[in-house]
Image (cartoon, rainbow, N blue to C red; front, side, top):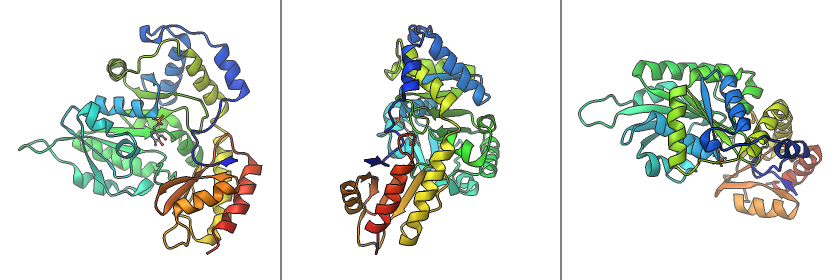
Length: 339
Ligand SMILES: Cc1ncc(COP(=O)(O)O)c(C=O)c1O
């Protein structure tokens, strides 16, 4: 099977497993796990921030960060398709009592002027806006990369209004590889980031919240409250350290394979947009196959893809799909998708 559903389906490599087996560990709730401490210091330094905190999932890392920057009852602005309001099961409301307001889904093509116009100032019982969240790369936005110039303009908007800027950077590694923007340059633009080790980087578990030392002290408290205080998790942090050392630069291979898939599919007229990173978004509007029918037919031919909506689907490249799998998908999918 060529499993192109998600970059979360990867399994740890032999080298990663060896690193996990050899990891020095301690009780991380006491902040005594040397491998976790090393990972946190390494990731904070990569983004030029003071500190970072290891969390079990991207969802928890995002939600801890949102609680750091938006007090209960106050408002977060984000894209209508943002992971934080689409796939995190209402956590911002349920755990943070955060009020969210969204701009129409524009993926990586967001317009800072639209965001600026949505900001509500304090006063007369309006819900005060406290933070803006963006997603780099944008998952439902087809792996699009928000340009650096847009992010700089958004930083200006946030500073003018006194707001915090959070980045859901589950796949910020892909943006870094695609656009060549140094990670510390992204880091400098955000008050908080969440970054994920278990997507393209191929670790089995783990995300980090990145921010100031003061924020991360508070984040440690919030993580425990949410049930995310873990003990001898150096074995997992070791997988993350291994992934950063060995799997970051190779994301360019995933991007090239996604581009090859896009090239094969272009004549079928089903690409939802340009392919910038490891996600190939499909729009089957008007096609004789809907997303579910395509997924069923592709599965029968040994290719798995994700259904996102009745007429939307995606293919994602990752560590566990090689050139042979892409060749196969690039052959059978255009056959299935002939009008
Ligand atoms: C953009 C984005 N943010 C956050 C997450 C959440 O990660 P997790 O599944 O580890 O909670 C995902 C998961 O796919 C994601 O795509």
